Length: 203
Image (cartoon, rainbow, N blue to C red; front, side, top):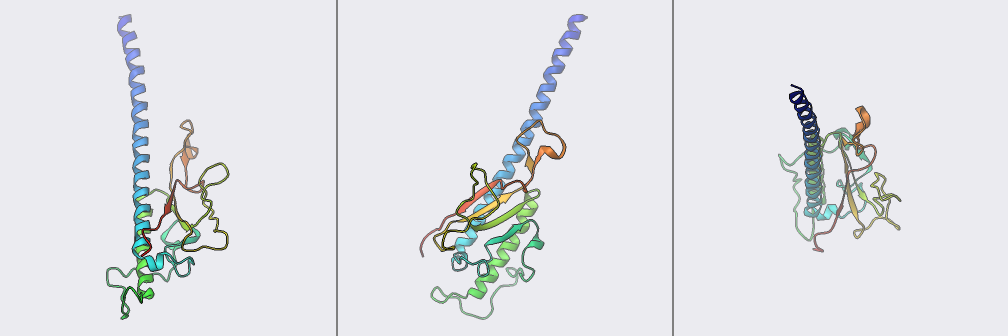
């Protein structure tokens, strides 16, 4: 009887360990999935900018809807209220769009619509998501950690400056011993993903 009881105790400790291991594996899988989703979204955003190059290369946020550098976007309401989604009805304004004489009015509307649609998906796919897109010469602080602040290039942003997509979301804290709200690392701490946008070509 004693041997049976000892066996049951040993088996119970083994089962408790496997339950903890399974819980850790589920959290790791979830965080890996969110990281993959964020990377895919950032890559898609970069491709949108490359596809709409006449707007995507403009250094001023007033002329480039892809630049979200005036503040960190935490909700669709943080985007300009004047923006409207026109991709389902067409963004044409009667002008002619050619390579030599681009219709920037149409392309700006396309950019605004793309950002609206992309942001809706990012906020839906990533819990507590924050996004910022800016020219940034120092996306990491002195400790090598990503930061939300954008450091403008010396002399002002140009077409050759680096545009960085910063994304953050709620995930488990690195310290697994924390409980409650302390067990979560939220976007207000620092970005989770820093994605530089490189130019596709010079054409």
